[in-house]
Image 1 (tube, each protein chain N blue to C red):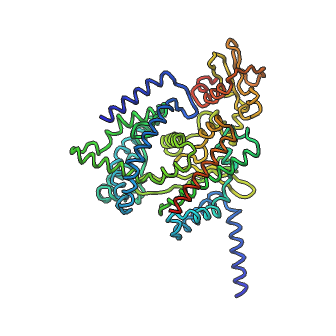
Image 2 (image 1 turned 120 degrees about the vertical axis):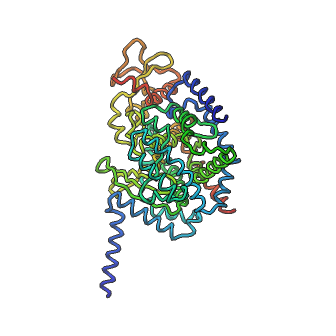
Image 3 (image 1 turned 60 degrees about the vertical axis):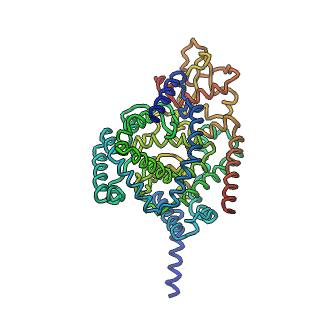
Length: 328
Length: 208
């Protein structure tokens, strides 16, 4: 029931997206909704889940908690194996099945993670990662009710697909099933207490910090910790100090149409020069009729009043699809 | 006898100097990691979260090997060159305080996890990524990668990436937004007030 509700919400969000598919810096067009949902999740966490998890951690001896974590982790390995195989990583999939076999038997129904000690490393896979591996884009960042940070692709995967691979959902006895799921939620949360405290301490803006960490983390997971360098050269030009940025800086990196239908170019090296941007030459409006691919040409700047917004847009576009689609 | 003692002393001095200067990046990370872990394991106060002791440890052993101005530049991104040298200095100071606190806090969460060292990856002769892994029962190993650059004073860390998340560039969107709203000075102010509030919570939790 809850899941159906969330799916409907997600669909609504997706439909809403069609209208405003802008590319912000972090691909977060749903920021308004997301911040609200993040707030709700955070409040529920503070009032219920975190206190219970904290108590659980205080009461349970460490070895017992490790056993609980291992138990649920072991159940997850089969679905991880299937996803590894779906992604063509047969070796990893076989290793996951080996883990499951060893830990279920030698490790006494998974209470002990003997497979890790034997050299079979745990992996982190889910259907969202499989879709990502297959080349599907992530879509906008979405904060799901209860489940927290996600994106359109991973959210659907999680709510529609992943739970089919979760053995707990096949427990016939409903109260037992719910209890098990409850314990898992608390155990997961207890394991994250340190991390969540750190994130809260470290963040200037908790919402943005969690969002950006999630986006980086998912990207890393899809490539199993070895993501290729950001495909978008403009993205790396953001890093003022990186040498890559210098190399890429010479080329014009964005060509977009602003809200008045004017075509605008920006070049990365101009963005890096403060004086010019504040003088208003960072972005150059060019009359609409002209073919405005004008790398290097000097224009007399005619800056609209809200050139700040324009700059923001042009900066945003560098991250996104605009640049890719306009590549010569 | 005296001679032997003297030569041993010389050797140990020399070894210490070599440890600071001559080590390759991976050997440097390894020696610092092992040293810090050994200290944590031997010190009950640190395990109990004694903040002052942890800070001293980080100050003495870890910070000298970080390049904070590059870290700050990396976090601020395209707005960095727009800051005046004074603003850059202020930003670096505040960001350093914030990162150090986070790092110290993370250290106090250390619980006997095994840290493995993986082959290093070189982007260039003067820039490498030293890769390590933290192993824990029941979860996949979490990677901790250090981006390092060669400087006249030895190898320095300019980014720390935990599980694929850069502790430095993760701030960039937030910093951009802060600068958009309040300029560079606005960002400095936000960082300063964040640091102050952390200091206060730490102080109050200690007095409890």
